[in-house]
Length: 271
Image (cartoon, rainbow, N blue to C red; front, side, top):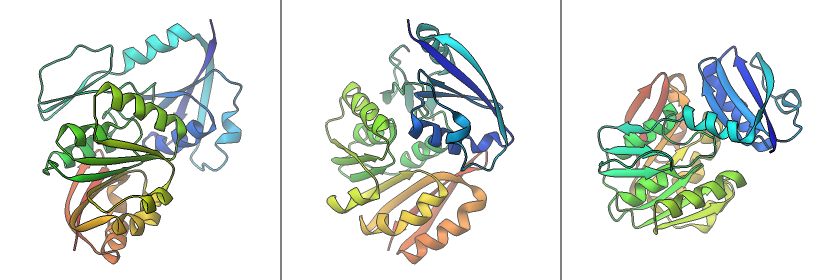
């Protein structure tokens, strides 16, 4: 049986673990589990985290241990619990029981985030519950596991375009779309350039990070119908003024804000 390495990271700023996870994921690490002091990362390859994390200026340390593949999966399953949001949405994995809620979503994230447990995904879901998605068109930028696209489909959206720059995430969301029998979604592997191939939509979702949002909101705005909505997350409350300014400069009007543990989500409407 294949041995995996578990890297247990302790960060001086554990709330910024997303930066580490993004770099390690791009380099070939297969999965991650959040911990109070940081996160655990898993790989079956000979990867050197210190080389991968050179761009990061946040102090960190880690320990390494070997685990069997089966134990690796069992550890993951114990870490991820079903999530209930507003007594409306029940997000589970394949090994959790089905329960009676208006929306039941099955996500097998292969040890990555994207089930709704992280604050930014949770906030995006909360924002989506405030709008009527029936017969709407939607773009989900940085779709990850596809959980937001799935919710849009179950909420009656007529057409959904899900995009992710990570090939692993793209393949994972294809599996999750099939599991949840969402027929109205089309998946794309690529970055913001893919938007040129898509029509304007009624709702644009982007759960990414501050720097990408600041750079790409001008492109997002061009793909939103007048009166359409932009929902964003992946940043802290201190970043709101910067993002509001860029959104306003690109024809978007601030509507509302949601905050959880300093992570923030904003809703805009296109003038």
